[in-house]
Each structure stands twice: as C-alpha cells, then as structure tokens.
Length: 520
Image 1 (tube, rainbow, N blue to C red):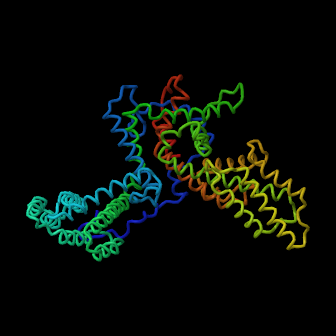
Image 2: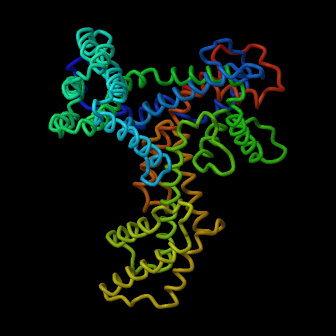
Image 3: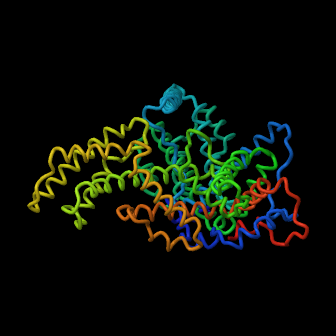
C-alpha cells in the first residue's frame, strides 16, 4: 500500500506472468516411460510418513458451522491467490452492474433516496446535519484506511480536521463549514491517490457549488481509489505468489481437506474413471497395471472435453473452471471451422487448391458466422446454412475470376448438405477432426517439452494450426501448474485405487510416487 504522497505507478493491469509454456512444463512435465510402468506398483505401495508430500484426510465427521465458514474462507483465499498467479491481467474493477438488473435498480433507488434526504436536510432552515455527519465519518474511515501504519502525521491531521465530536458540536450551533471540509477531503484524496486519478481529483476541485453533487462525486472517486489500492497490493503480491504459489495453494487445499474430508470426492471419481478406461482398453485376460502417469494423462485429457452439464469439475480444477470452459469453447469452434474447410476442399477439388488468400477468407467468414455457437439461443443448423450460402457465393466469385465454371446447383446442394451434417456426432469428418485434435493434446500432455509439439499438428489440422498452438499452450500451462500443486493428492488417490487391496512392498523405497508425480 502506498505511503503518503507515494503513488502506485500503475494499477490497471498486472505484471507479466514471467513464465512461458516450456518453463512451466519443465516445472511439472508429464511423460510415461517403460521404467515408470515397471516401478509404479512398488512406488505407489510404499509408505511415506512425510507430511510435506503426502496429503492427509480425516475420517468422516460432523462439521460445525464455524468449520464450514473457515473452509469457505480458505477456498476464497485459494481462488483469489490462484487467479493472481495464473492471470497476469487480473485486477479489481469497481462494481459494474447490468443496466437492467434488479440489483442495480434497487441500489440506484436506495442511493437516490439517501442523497435526496441529504439535500433536504441541508436545505432546511436551520440545516440538519445528521446525514452529512454520517457521510463525513465514513469518508474519514476510508481515508484512514488508505494510510500506511507509519503515516502518523497524516493520520493525526485527518483525525483532527475530521473530528466528529467537534463537528457535532458545530452542527448543534449551525457552524459547520461543509464546503471547507469538502475542500480538505479533496486535497487529501489528491495526496493519496494514484496518478491515474489526478484528472478525477481536478474535476472535483472544479465541481459546482452544489454540495450534494460534490459529495456524490467524492464517493465515486473514493470507490475508484479503493480499487486502485487493492490492485497495487495485487501487483506487489504477484511476484511473491509466483515464487511460493504452489506451496501456498497446496497447503490451503490441505487445510480445506482437513476440515472437509469429502473435498476430493469428485477428484477421486475423475481419476477412477480414467483408471477404468485404461484397464478396459487393455483387453480381456491381461492384468497389467497402468502406470500412474498414464492414468493422469488420460484424466487430464478428459478435462479438455468435460461435460459440465453431467457432472461438476474435480475439486482440484474448480479455480480454473472459467478458463477451461473458454478453452473448450475455442477448441470446439476451431474444430467446426476445420471440419467445414475439409468438406469444402474435398468436395470442390483442385480448382480451389493452392490459394492461401481464398483459404484465409473462407476461414474468417466461417469463424465470424460461427461465433457464439455455444450460447443457448444459438441455432447451429441455421448458422451452418448461412455459412454454406456465403461459401458458395465466395467460391463462385473466386472461380469465375479465374475463368472456372461456377458451382452447379447440385454441387452447391451437396456441399450445403455435407456442411450441415457436422451437427451429427457420428459424422465421419467431425469424428476425424476430433480424434486428431485429441492426438495433438495427448502429445502435448505426454511430452516433456510440449513447446516443440505445439508446432507439430496432425495432418488435416493445418488450417487451424495457429489457434491450436495458442489453445494448446494455455491448456498445457494449466495442466502443468495443476499437477505441481495437486500432484501429491493425485498420487495418494491413484495409490489407494490401484493397490488398496494389496499389501505394501516388503522394502519400500525412499522416494515416493508423490514425488514422482509432481516432479515428472
């Protein structure tokens, strides 16, 4: 928090995150090797007494209200810290409610009533100062909250000028200098505000003589200053959290788990389903135990296509739900664009091959028309009809410009029908694209150097290579950070699922699976 006259240089945006995909992946890469699979049973049955790397959970118990509230606070702190770490642009915005929201209407009416009462009291003869004194008292507390603990001189000055006992005595004798107090408040705000608020302070100094309007604007600027102080604090915390974020988030989640033993219920189900998928895929008669890294890789891949309507995210991913949903939306739109482009080029053939400018125009056109395809009121079939019509027009224009015959009505109908058929889940083009996108993300998750794999897209996905690389970088960064924080919890869950009915190894090794999962 800034000292008196010491202003934050900028409060509107965060610092750079300071790590790219490769550095993030080096911290917590995931790769499956033969040696991993051979030793997985031994390492997962070893007994680890270290509290640092082994998550602990309590037996079921009845939770008290204060424990529930404390867990809620822990979760809130965890969410805020995680957002500061992974979102370099995270900052606090003053309340901004939708124009037609009920809450905004109620709030505006309450505020209007308050300011109307203040104006009515000050216009009385003699004036009433009840509302004004409450305002001044609140302003004093806000100004004091901006001060550093060592700003004793400024603190003393504010408490002396805004001495509420003295002001009440003046009010009793109709001797309150409201305009003078407002002028002092604005001057003090100018000393404490960030440079970005200098213009707002100047406007306050030039405000009309209407004291009610002036106080209303003072409160508006104070709200902005509160947000500035919080954002300044966030910017100062970000480097510290980058260095200690993994340990802090892990310890905070452990605290939640200690108070709420069921806090890993959905996470356990998620990992269990991945383990069952691997076990079922090995065929009958085989009793091979999947490696822990195989299980995690399959589980992480499932996050990419998570059905949010059927089940909630694992608890360890809740702080990233907004980012994961956005990645999923972007990826599905990219897939749809690629599917349409594949259909166009396979249907029309050589007459439109080798024309990068045409391909770019078609891609932009399809992307624009399919924008928002995940909203509930979006009609995908109608949108694809529009896409087909626009594509036929663009293709006919390109063909005629190069002295090729235009598309026949029959060919246009065929093209339209094939494009509209991608709404069907078993459509072969859709299945092909989705499978190859899965291959791309599988390679990213399993490779220790995913930055190289970002440039290596499977055949048939070249048209969306830039979008895939960007989306892939975002996703693998989230996966690697998630693995760094929650690796010990995942290791403990996998060990229990795989070997809970088996005796521990006779001579357990010193290194544990928990260490492997977080470091590999």
